[in-house]
Length: 62
Image 1 (cartoon, rainbow, N blue to C red):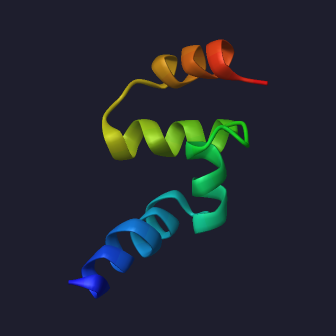
Image 2 (tube, rainbow, N blue to C red; image 1 turned 120 degrees about the horizontal axis):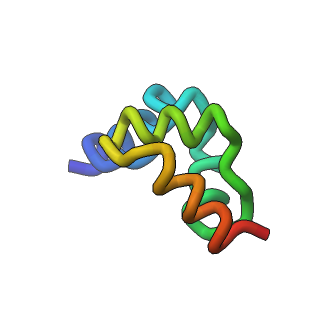
């Protein structure tokens, strides 16, 4: 069970987004801004349009 959680929460984001778990954590916790590359990857991975990510970045970006 623990191995599945580690794979799902740490390894998959790194593989799918091409970034580190630390970067994913910073993004989730609002400590980093999305790059254009990550916006595009999240759009594809989650099926959410890139416009949504751009709008969220404008609203919550630092």
